[in-house]
Length: 238
Image (cartoon, rainbow, N blue to C red; front, side):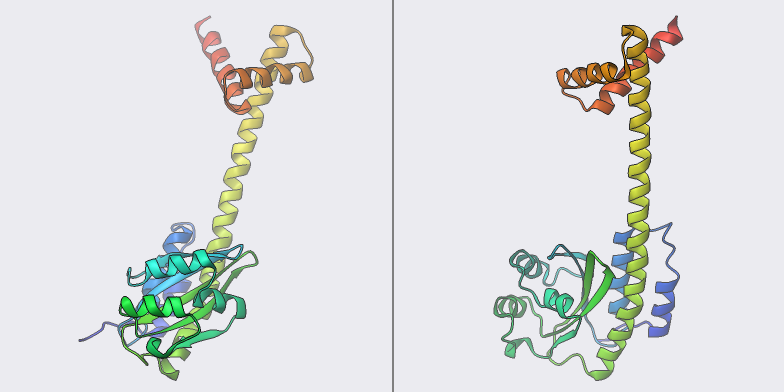
């Protein structure tokens, strides 16, 4: 059966053209999985695993061939791809039927039709690492040339993922800072309103605001915003 492929050079170039401001980290991960599948001449399925704090998860995939098997192994922290992360090595499994390093994974893989696989570590960021996991239904599907292509692809993919993760983390931090600044502004405004109404100090005003928050079972920032909104409505109707 014919298998459409993409020239590795074109795949590398496509990874470099990803516009981080237009796509999120999950989209980049999915694109990496799809491109890895297309650079090989043999039919394969691909998973990209991310590991944070020693816990892995399938972040992107081209098929559900062995997702259940992977998730169980992540939970047990015993998985080929986790070993690839820890060692930084390329871990090929030429024939799953004769593999004895991961017995539970081997049994489940054979039941789902996996014949051979390759896992390659992807350094993403100090606290986050990943692996490119490629599965084939036939044994001995990955020769030296194929593994060389995957190794080169993984190097390009690692750069793309590191950039995407950095961009995503920076964007998240910026959003959190904006939210914090907005919350602080609302709290300061609310304190000013309370000080004007109660003729009290800033410390006393914050204590009053905190009590309002507790009594209404709302966060301080939400109680503050409600007070500011109420004062704005009162001002507009007066």
